[in-house]
Amino acid sequence: MTRTNLFVDVVLSALSIVKGLMVTLTNALRPRVTRNHPFQKTPIPEVWRGRLVHLRGEDGRLRCTACLACQKACPSHAIPTIQGDDKKGKEKRAQVYVWDASRCLFCGLCVEACPFDAIRLTREYSIVGEDRADLIFDLNRLLGPAEGETA
Amino acid sequence: MTTGLTPTEHITLNMGPQHPSTHGVLRLELELEGEVIVACRPIIGYLHRGIEKMAEARTYPQVLPYTDRLDYLSSSSNNMAYVQAVEKLLGLEVPERAKYLRVISLELNRIASHLVFLATFANDLGATTVFLYGMRERELIMDLFSMWAGARLTQSWIRIGGVGADIPDGFVDQALAFCRLMPKRLDEYDRILTGNRIFRARTEGVGILPPELGVNYGASGPTLRGSGVEFDVRRAEPYEVYGDLDFEVVTRPTCDCMGRYLVRMQEMRQSVRILEQCLKRLPEGEVRAKVPRVIRPPEGEAYGRVESPRGEFACYVVSDGSPRPARVRFRAPSFYHLSVLPRMLQGWKVGDAVAILGSIDIVLGEVDR
Ligand code: SF4
Ligand code: SF4
Image (tube, rainbow over the protein chains, first blue to last red):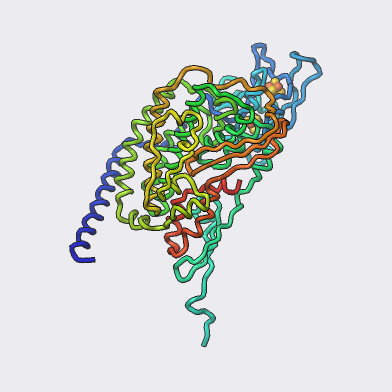
């Protein structure tokens, strides 16, 4: 490389870096886009597909009639057990219902399949436990109103 | 005295599976002479989950959530390829609005995926700032997806017969605002990265993929278009409403890492263009056709192909008339790019391997399946 060429190259390279630094500068002056998690919560949209909950009807009873439609729709056997009481038809109600969060894909196919609108995926996205068993939810734990929801 | 080492002896070096720039769990067995790569053997399979086999034990709608987990950076295109094949089997006609919504979802995903490419590619080459910018803009797309589908990555929102649900109020405005912002941000990336001397030195003329070689190995997408081959499934075999939309197929004749990078940068602008057209033209109506509860396509086979951000993603479905597919096979573009990689790496230094690997933008989720 000749001297002049080298000189031109050095100047152009330096210019390209100055140009880049201008971009970083404008960005440094912009309002901040990150949040101080976990102290500042990110707003989660209503339609979020998080933890599963069971809903109750107006009479306070479970809506779920143990019809097994959700179990059949689930691709990953995340709803291993559903048992109803001994009533028949629409009067029947679930007594045992197990949802395994560790198997769930949060696809929402179960909610779509349910003919009684008995289950919903909620905005609760942080499902943690100390061991595997903590991630297996029985009916008692599925009933509690999820965080930020009125069940 | 002999040391046992002669100057011509080759050293084998493992790059990966935990190397940060292997974009997932990939192992590259490099054979080196000094610092020069003489041979490379990609070793895959670390992320194998047997999705194709699992699909045979699932009903047609149940397969869908699994397709999200192939190319997890653009789950819409995977959904689309599978759904396209199943809809062909069923002979199903999808409502017009759903078609537009699908294209919106696909193009948003394309931008999101290219932004991850930009971010990681820049990061691999030492420009960490760009990584943060790329992720920042991608977050805007993730917000759009969360308010529509309720999930960020694994949306499963392109469903058999249409889309999961209609877009919520405010979605169009927010998406249009994104379309206005994005070109400005792309200009910024160009200023900070594309012209940068170091970035150019590391990418220009590096990792040549001759067009014939690319075609012979089955490369597609930006990797092939960076070698000047004008092939885009959206143009070659338009699906959904791509036939009515106005966009350019971007190519670069340089065949190097820079070419592939520039193709993706330009494609993001084209995607913004497509998005704007779709959002403005969005027709009213249903978003999902009537689909029977149990889907039993007639016996036969169908092939669905889409242009994913990485290339031609396709899905082959064989039906035996039962509610479960007899065979599902995915054509993952990254797999073909990975098989041409050894040819591209030959003769380059170890340091360039990172740039070349980054420039073909692979996702191991779809390679290993
Ligand atoms: S969300 Fe999907 S994986 Fe989870 S329980 Fe429902 S159907 Fe099963
Ligand atoms: S949740 Fe719905 S689909 Fe599942 S058993 Fe109960 S009523 Fe049936």
